Image 1 (cartoon, rainbow, N blue to C red):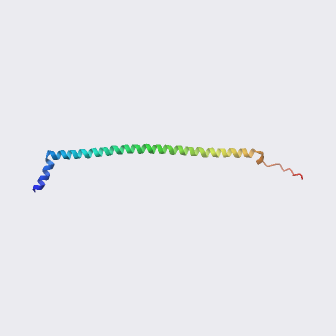
Image 2 (tube, rainbow, N blue to C red):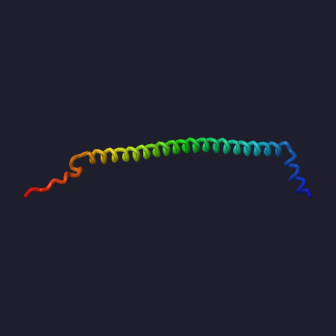
Image 3 (cartoon, helix red, strand yellow):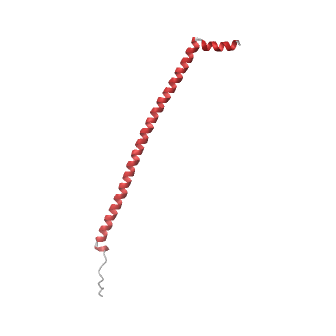
Length: 97
């Protein structure tokens, strides 16, 4: 029993309470620092995610503009080619020998 009494005395003594207080303060400081670091990391991830989303939207807009522009230019070229004399059918005139 003497040994158990000694264990309770160390927790009850002012020196033991100071050690407990220091340990708890250290633990709380560690938790606070981890939480603060986690918030900063989350903010960085959110900024990167927003930037990647913005870049993806711009890339898709350029792709759509390129496809629409290519179709428009192709249609313009076909319309010009149809009007050229090379692509028109000639009249049915007989060939003289």
